[in-house]
Amino acid sequence: MSNSIDTIWMTALFQSCPLGMVIFDDGKLAWANEQMEQLTRLPMSTLLSLSSDEPGQHSLTCLFERPDEIEIEADSQHLARFLGCEYKTIEAPNGTVVEAGFFTDISDKKLLQDRVDRLMLSDETTGTLNLRGVMRDLEPLISRCRRYENPLSVLQIEFNIDADKDLEDTMLNLSRVVRSQLRWADLVSRNTDNSFLLVLPETDNEAAQQLAGKLINTLESNTEVDLPTYYCATAEWQRGNDMNMLLKRINNGIVQAREENKVVAA
Image 1 (tube, rainbow, N blue to C red):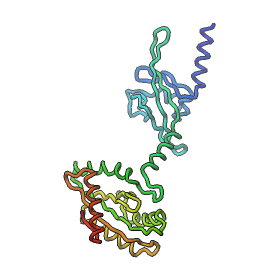
Image 2 (cartoon, helix red, strand yellow; image 1 turned 120 degrees about the vertical axis):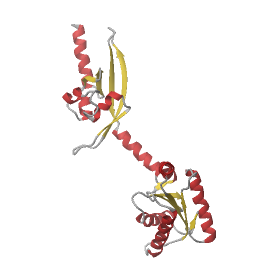
Image 3 (cartoon, one colour; image 1 turned 60 degrees about the vertical axis):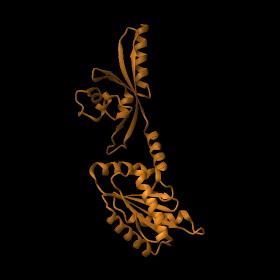
């Protein structure tokens, strides 16, 4: 009687557990609790029909690969959901061994982390990337240049903003004009307090110089922006350049632009 009661209570405990739970059995799910139904938005019949032998059957067949995190895709009624996953091998007193999975909803944590990441990689005032953000995105673009020999250029424009002007307000207004001239694949970052760095994939230095001219004309003709003195330089990626070398070249170009008061091809 005692063993029967223990089993009944144990089953009730597992079913009421706030964690999603499953038991794996030879490439299939032998059991899942009701919370797993709610977390995955799948009926029990579908959960228990999942099989590692049919990886294309459902996106949740990735369970059998024991991932640390699972994304439940959004649908017409629900947002995407993220589940954190843990796995334990459990041995019963009689020697029976089962492998169990435990799942929690980490969507809020994931959303918060995404927001933190965005703040770490973007400029608070202008909403553009910051230097850390553009370096993160520039590195794979340079790797692609090395592999396929695609052109890539960078353009930096620096503004000499008077001390009596509001720096943040001025850079915000300038950023709107700069962004309006870019293609969807181009990147823009606030490189320093008073400069923007543009990353231009599939663009050689001649095209980058043309964009610099177009950008300057737009800035000069914009009546809503009180345009400060500016300096501009471009640089095209060259074989043998890594990211740091390319950024050093564009910085040297800005130094030269200050001295020569013209758009410099570094």
